[in-house]
Length: 310
View 1 (cartoon, one colour):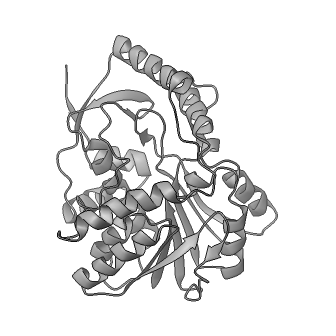
View 2 (tube, one colour; view 1 turned 30 degrees about the horizontal axis):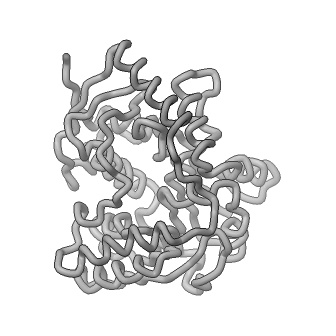
């Protein structure tokens, strides 16, 4: 069957950025070949059945609970692995990127040629989103920074930017300390619990600061109010989220409905974007961007973009 390759044209369609900008970012930070083939009707039906089976029978971890053990264990494994290695995009790859055999793209299932396809496409998407919203920002604070992969991308993309990362697992702070030494620049790490609002006081957040989350608020489920209050108390210049957004799925599409039910089954972020919309209607915030990025793994799409300010 015919093989396709993602190009700047496709990333322009995914992000709504100009094709020339996408091409330039991909020249500055070249990805590996991003090849795939679209599944035919029979294969797609088989994938749909697999998604249904996993939702029906699978033991799926539910988000939204204050259990840091899974992250302490996961990021601890990465930190231990890095003790004798250089920090790179590959060595910071989170374990949950297992190399999906099937992904979602533009409303259909596809079969990647490489096991790292989802991760590699996600890196290009992040660089394009960072280029759009974080260029010229003095300080970026990432909440739920995990392995620190996004801060490493920002370090490469914006060498003058001050970087701060927080996570509820202290092992993340250890990784960022090693990254700061390796990159010879200021990269701070702090412990912060997004569910409770406890930990780092956020004393460096001011009107020159952007706050960012990437696949972090998804873990809050419906329990995002404490973190929302924290943001209101600090009033950064910009808030940028790259997350799965439940409200962006088309409920009239069976393809989307499966992702929507999986999102709910996992207890991922729920109600936050509707909250922002209500606040925007009464002038309490301004939503600068709300865009679904039609790409993801087999089960759902986690690269939608929401940018807003107070």
